[in-house]
Amino acid sequence: MPRLHRATDCSLHHITSRGNNRRSIYEDLTDREVFYDVFDTAIQRTDVLCHVDVLMGNHYHLVVEGAIQDVSELLWRLNHRYALAYNERHGRINHLFGRRFHCSSVGDEDGARAVIVYVSVNPVRGGFCETPAEWPFGSFRAHVGSEPPRPHLSTALVADLFGRGQTLAEACEEALARDPRGRPSLHSLLPPRHELTRDHVKHAVRIFGYTYEEVARHYGVSLRTLQRWLRE
Image (cartoon, rainbow, N blue to C red; front, top):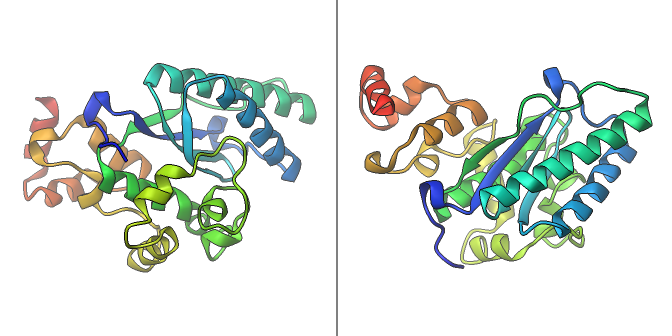
């Protein structure tokens, strides 16, 4: 696998998109299948690879690869066209999704593995199932070989990252044993001090639920020092 670029040049991204006011974006099985149909079509029209996905109740997660302008185009196609289909099917007229999707760059292989595991165990964390393999609306089953991948899914990156030692299933089991929320460690999420940006910290806090105090302790500094770093 080519070395992942860091910071703003990074081409691997963790995407989260939520329903307006955190409302459900899937009412039944048909909605989830319609979402995947829209996704399969949208990704064929953009220069983006999807390596991991999971559909939750009021949001979804993706790990995608591509230039940020191509990722934005993909998400516009996906959210806009799925929202139109959802509203037509359920007789709605208002916005389905809330604010713009959240996008965080993934800077290296350790970070990529951590985010892939986190997305894969999200249904367990959300109380939908007891193991990732029990959840049918995500890429985990395809990556462990228990079902074929959907048309939008690229499996090569995950096979490479988890094919040189610990498997994806083993990494997910270890993550859940370490933290019931399935969060990656701050060590895997945050870069060395000289590479730290506000986006790294926002990703850890907003997506994974860490506090600024925990981030400061990770670097062995006070909260005030961390805040000064982020201002700089």
